[in-house]
Image 1: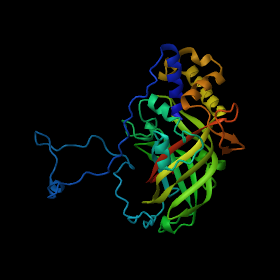
Image 2 (image 1 turned 120 degrees about the horizontal axis):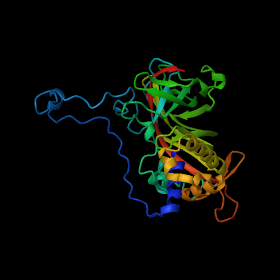
Image 3 (image 1 turned 45 degrees about the horizontal axis):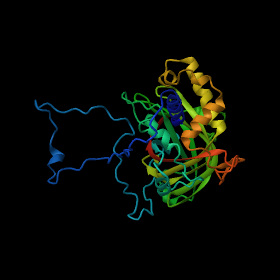
Image 4 (image 1 turned 180 degrees about the vertical axis):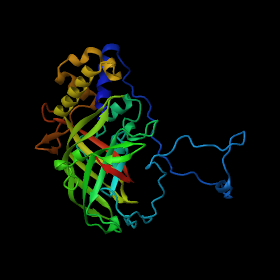
Length: 358
């Protein structure tokens, strides 16, 4: 969701100063390999790292609880068909996993390879243009900041999965999706307001009931949900998505859960864009010195629909028709035939120990 404000700032800035619409070269993100190989003779295992004066070399920063290197998944057979690792003893709301990576595929071919099943010729990659405008990773807040805190916490929780059971042994599972909190001092926590009647023992407000699993693979939806984003240093702002579907492969990750090959598809409507613009306008009225507000200047005084049209032009225009919460193919060349923009996100989840619900 951070993408929309970033795209809005870029378009409005272009109206004033002009811009080169040639996309900058894209440098794919490099995933952390998780560990460094030891020297072939094994000497690296026993040697102590020292500086030039002989004193021990200290680490740059203490790792946060879920930032440990991800070991190779020994629970998967070479063909990836069987998940053997059982869930370890339960903790608070366990098993729970945190979204550690989220990205928009760079182009339609990459989206198809990732498994993005979404209407429209762009296959949900139109918003990637906003990613380029932002200068790289628009989901940066999913990672720890310089103090070790994580300001954007998205959690998955599985129900009907007992300790000692592997994901491969599950026929069905209920998945809950919610926002959470993190601090380097207190760890991860869930927000009780994410549950119906603020009761963590009950249903979550966003919940996928009795999902069928096959060797850990699942598909869930459609539903409506919001993905949060931030405007530079602003508070989190939600972007509403319609006809949302999730897929991926789930496995036990200690007392938590992990999801690999995760894909989220959904659709952005005019109403969702206007809602974001209203949030941005309220933010700038509260703090006009915020970075994005200073860039936009007085452009937010323009009508909501006009500002939304500017954002839409960056997304590549409508490519899908939504009716009663369901998505259908449409002809973008026919006036009024399409009313939504497809979006595809890849994501990755790693298990965490939840400290509390607050």
